[in-house]
Image (cartoon, helix red, strand yellow):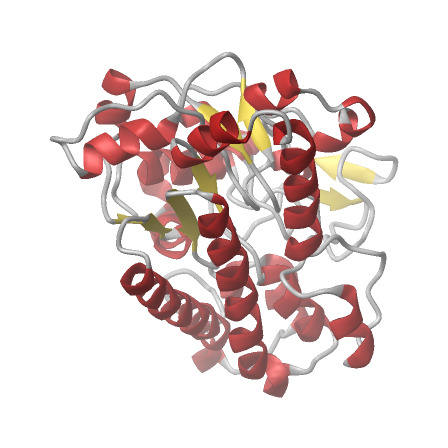
Length: 349
């Protein structure tokens, strides 16, 4: 997805902040599969806003009349419910998805086709744009795992991780082949803290829950396993492409900071859900805000919006900690970014 509104780019500043003696290029900022597009939350896009960026224009709102100007402004290729793996994988695995979903590959292909059509007349200029841009690839994979969790196929989860990580790596490598030199790759979130999944795997065995936050320990350990495998894959890519700035973004620990001490941030018990149905249930497919749903009086005090997604308040806290470099490797500084550039954005999710 692209996102920019006549701003310039984060990647240049990132490259400068990671390598303070490097020259500041003139660039754009792109993001692939950016997770916190809060269409399904109660707020806006926290990470771009924390970077001083405006909301990102959805690609599909302009796909019939896509122009070079749209490319320069930035577009969002992200799709709610997206998976890393293609639909055919789930069909072959006997998983019935509730609707057709756009995989990471489909989103990348949409970007690549748009890029190719716009840049056919001026390849060098477009190459320069990609070289001086940041792509965020992720968070992706959580929905893949969730579909197996909903089907109670826990024993198959670990076997999915390598498939998911390889697909993420494949897209990263193709972006590098196109000329991208700066990428941010977020981790999985703590799935054991998602209220819908906690309810689904409800048990009287207290030992399964973390006493500090009430999250499912085994499911958070699985998220950490995914993140460890992702980091190992990123290390391998760094060795193959030492000129590329590959930044790991630790969504997991940025979120756990909130789950472990919500009162430190003015929030209530983190597993309480803001938007529920008239019976107080949140394990329903009805989107919040539609008939039959009830929203809490003050969402800014909650961590969970609808039992799956976080609130704007929680996303803002995560975004702030991420952009100040506390949860990135290598670390970067927002103050450095703000001093040295304004920003532009592309996303796939």
